[in-house]
Amino acid sequence: MASDLAKRLGKKGRVERDQLVKAGVIELLPVAKPGRGKQAALTERGWAWAQENLDAEVCQSKMAAEVLEAVLKHLKRYMETHNLALSEIIRPAPEYPRADLEKLVQEVYFRLSRGRSNVRIRLSELRNCLQGMSRSELDSTLLRMQRNGVLSLYGLDDPREIGIDDEQAAINIAGFKKHIVYMGG
Image 1 (cartoon, rainbow, N blue to C red):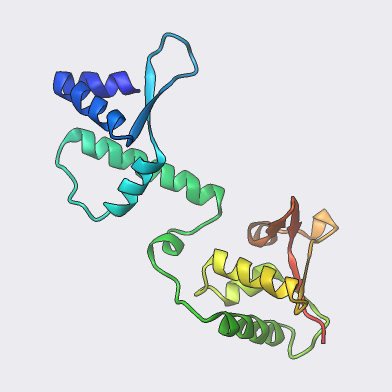
Image 2 (cartoon, rainbow, N blue to C red; image 1 turned 90 degrees about the horizontal axis):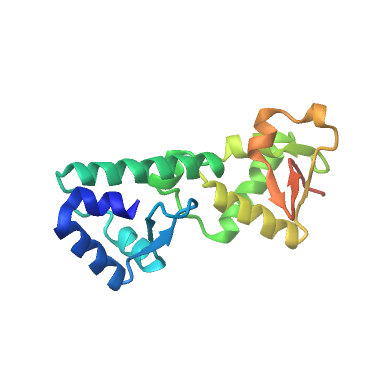
């Protein structure tokens, strides 16, 4: 809450909060219950500033620790929602040229299918073999390959066939989950 922030920091804190609002870094929004004050929220400018200053020295104040704790909780929720590992966010995945990514996907597909085309391979197996590639990079590569007619992505129709790994590995296309990669010959 914005009022909590101002109370903790005293008059100086209210002045600093107001300066942040004036600079367009935060905005004060009404909370769900009327009469409960306002909530401080980062604006797009505030998010951009935070991203540019991730390497800044952390202040030793208790308030800085609370802010960092809140950011880490938000990061955790984001990772859980988007099924991301911390290593995918912090450790940069190796960057490959587009053609190399597509070639790599094809090589792994044919290794999993034992050299045969027209075999359905679970996306979870493909992801497992391509752990060095970020999820977003693999998804965009697969979608591009599908658009170019190199492969097809299918969903599993029988819910009894869908395991936890399949569900977590699925690509959502227009509200339909795709669990299978199929590459024709």
